[in-house]
Each structure stands twice: as C-alpha cells, then as structure tokens.
Length: 309
Image 1 (cartoon, rainbow, N blue to C red):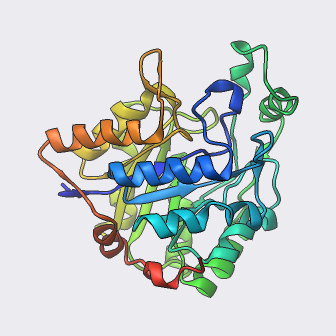
Image 2 (cartoon, rainbow, N blue to C red):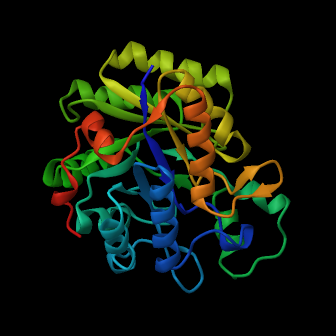
C-alpha cells in the first residue's frame, strides 16, 4: 500500500452548473479561495477548470485562468493541474489554451472519446438561474466527448514534450487503459504513470467496488509497477470509492467537480470540507497524506519554479 496518499481536489469542473449548488465556485476570487482552502486542508494537487465569472459557464480563455492561477500559486505550495478536458463544447485548441499558457507541472489527459452524459439531471431540475444551463446539460445527450488518438498525440507533443508537463491520465473505462498502453509501447509516454480511474459517469464504467478492483487488475497487467493510481467517483460514490482506493494502495480525488455533496442530502459548503473528510478517513486507516513536495517526488514533476505564473 502507498503509505503517502496524494489528495487531489478538483475545485469546480465543467459538469455542474451554478443552479445546482450555491457553493460551486464561479468567479476567479471564488475559485482561488476554494483552491487555497483545499490546499490548506491537505490537498497536494489542485485540478483546475475556469468559469465565465458572469454566469458560470465553462471557460477556456487563458486570461480567465490567469485571474486566479497566480493567487493560488502565490498562496500555496500545491501542485497546479490544469484541465485539458475543458468541456464537450470546446475544441482541442480551446481546451489546451490555458495549459499552454501557464506550462503547469501537471495537466489532465482524457484517454478516449466517449459518450459523457449528464443530461439526466434534467429529470430532477426544472428551473435554472441562467439561460445556458438547461441547453448545456441537454447537449450532453447528443455530443461525443472527443479524444481521438490524434488529439491525444497532440496533447502529448504540444504540452508534455514542449513544456515538461506530466499527466493525470483520466481513464473512464477499461479500454482507456489499453489506449494508454498503446502510447507507452510507442515511446510517446515515459516514466511513472499517474492513472485516474474515473467511475460513475454515464457512458463510462460504473462506480462499484468490483469495477475498481478490475480496473486496478488490468492496470497491473499492462503497466506492472510502473504506475501510481488515484480514483475519482461521481456523486454519492465519491467518498466510498476514494476510501477503497486508499485501501488498495492508491491515491484519492475529491472536490466539487466530482460531487456537490458531503454526505447524504448534505451539500458540501466548500471543497475543503471534502478534503478534510477524506483526509480524516485516510488517517484513520493508519495512512499519511502526501505533502505537495512528496507528491512531486512520487510523480516526477518538473517543479513549481518552472510554472509560468
């Protein structure tokens, strides 16, 4: 078992909309405050998306990211991890824009195209604060979240090779592990891998203990001891699956991107609340949380001094 557990906090994401929770950070100051609070609570890695500060829709412009990234970089030692997934409405160039601008230590990389559904929220929610929210949610029923082999190669070349950024390989199904193996075998990915098993998204593998165990077993077969893994799980599965990940020797991810709740029927008031909860569980299991510098060593990152912030 990994004795030092890396806690990643995904602060806002692009799935949830402002009407779903009053605590979802939208403005740059809110995102910065939430990220800093999560780091202070024990998150070693901060996975970051941006939002239009006026209505909360997903944003990709580097200027929007730069309205909060320097605040976070100055106030914490946490590893900054910028999304290259963005949202299903963005082009690849748009999704890469902020990471190419900031040259972060880490970035996410989705390992395959997929149906990525969150339209089912509309079965429960009928009123929204902003006009964009309902059409955006509905649009996930008719769009493919595109991550072709060519797209992935571009991300590796333009961000990994050119900037020394390492990746959080987001794997939403078993086939994504085989896609990553393809790139490893061809020398496009080197060094210790950081896999993020993503469970519970409609269109990907379901969030249950058997599936998590299976994902790890396949990763063991494909990558041997050349990888570290973490687990994110959507909604109510977040904490149970993160706990199982720690028991299996992996790392954990929480945050309002993945779940808006702290417990049954209880909205999380902050990202830090979720970090504190999983930290308590991890430590009660007799494990320790990793500091940012310990995470850098485990993942062979380039160092915060080489981030352009």
